[in-house]
Length: 442
Image 1 (cartoon, rainbow, N blue to C red):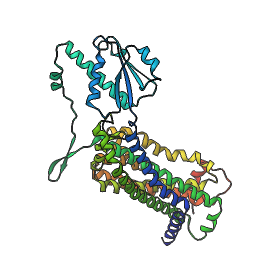
Image 2: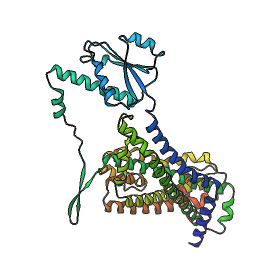
Image 3: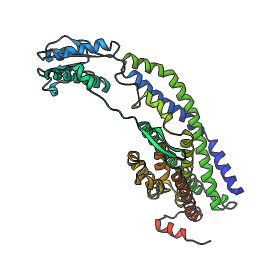
């Protein structure tokens, strides 16, 4: 055990002192913050430029005049409607000589034939601008149809109801049943991000193990090391050492990214809210596809202590399981180009876990989700996708025990390949050869 500890120290200290580790540890939070800031800046600036739309209305009732109320209702909006020309050809021929970006053409009978309307532009409008125009036209045509059927639009608005069901989950406890608020959309985001992070970290640090073993083998350093340390001790020390390197880097990223993102949020949030209140942003305050309220609700979706604790466990458990297999590959090959034939079978379960993630998100309590959260090769990702939606403690316990058992088994498997392959040079290894190594005695 003392020798394994020495190898762990060597692997850890050697890697954390590397310039590449220091640079990436610093750049990681900066890149995350830059990405976060970019999303905020896009949300703030995407509507900064005013988009003027020339209305060409050929309908007898001048349906487009109702758009004037939009200009009155939202004086600070970057979408402005203007009127000057009676024909589309006049507006089109003048578009590069005057201050408007698009032409909204309304045909003679837009109520009966709304498909005849179109938007022609010299500067492409943003999606939010186009959506705002469509919403206004839909309202106007809807009002015209109500009047045709002698229905007062005010009465229609009073009876029209939009239902947005508020979700609650009923749980059974020792003291009886209790309710808890369900933030389904926000949990989807947390689940997806958690699963992807586990996938990225396992793959990233697993490949580091493979390259580390392969480099020591190709440089013949391993011949000196195994004279004092058993191959199994060397493999375990390398795997655990790199695991601590990964965990150290991850925790530093979390802390610094949290600090930087918090500072950016405090700096930019007032600007976003000002634009929402002024109407210069066409929809709700959007940030990466979610509104500001949704972002704040992300902190309420689940028990954060359980989420963080299980994330660390599945990161370490999944990494240890896969890295032992990566170590076995590294010991069996002499160059990185030879690793491709062995990498695919190992990475396939990880890729498959991501592929079935959508099915798990749609039904996190289904049989498919439960089965793959117990299989050690898929449980690190699938279980992390399920946890935000709530998972029974017995399922977590069973999944954790099976993952630990899977790690022990893959370590035993990898050790038998490692002890032979680490001293094997100049031979093209096949699956048949690996099978023989598994059963060598001694």
